Image (cartoon, rainbow, N blue to C red; front, side, top):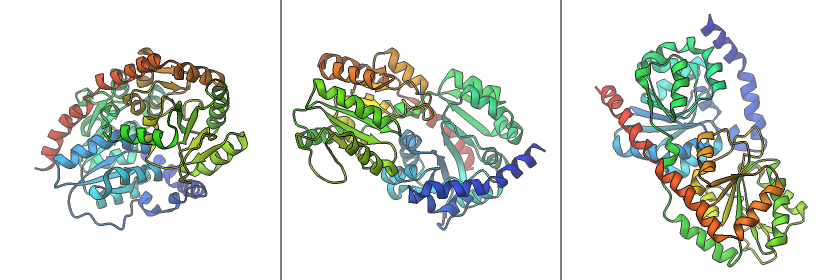
Length: 426
């Protein structure tokens, strides 16, 4: 009965899903492309068994990068398929892996779409990064006896409560066909409450700590400073969302009263908002330039809009202080603190960091991250840090230590995957 009800509800929801795609495509045309893949249809051919890695969007793709590279190296005879939900995730897959993997959009959790995708992909192993739980996908793994790994898995109390009502749809997979590589003991206990066999739950840590820092980034950051802001204090507001840019620009006006030559690097999270943020900067009365214009900053420019993809690490490396966005607005939950921390930057975040609370709280406790709530607090802390190189170094060093001390998850996850691949190849 539950499965029948879920099937009816998911198919009734299809018009809403299609409408959502077209609504998103108004400002982001790639949402209108490759729609067939979202229903399990692909024009590309796969002529060998595959390993399927699902990472919902940019952050999860970045987290999965070292794992995907390790799988490519260990299993060169398998096709690697990486799925995402968003076009920005798709673009990041292309940037990171090129033709070494096949990208597809993940199918909606419709029974027919999921079956078609499995028929096309022919996976020997399915790996889902972090927190995606889809009843039909899980059940299909169980029906086909395909091992399923939740890598760097996490689940909130609220999500665990919600999924408990759907466990009947994929109980057998949870009991026998799944391996949980949980981020923490707390996450492990929540999966246990869903009925996962305790012998299949392992606490491996957060794979985000195992990212590879491009050795060229520091040099690119130094070159940016030389070209655009030699001798100027720089702070970056990264991965910002609507309503955050106004706060950032208001803070920057206050910062300029103490550091009149300070440069703000403003990097919105979503490319479809680049134009509107450029307009906002212009209306604020602050002079600036954009990455897309190719124009060098002049002494009169106080804002540089990073309206490009794939250059955030360069902007981090060029800065003295970083604010990581998505954290001043309640519904986002914050973005990746680890990348700027690995570069030794003192960090600011808003109070809403539910996407990675363990990481944020650890870095706050160790002094690597400071929490701000508004433009006044943001300006005060940026001014204090720009004026105190020793404090910047202390807090930046604390962040680097947090990253270095928590590496090792990748090795532990690969150790769990190895016997599954051995059994699958028999």
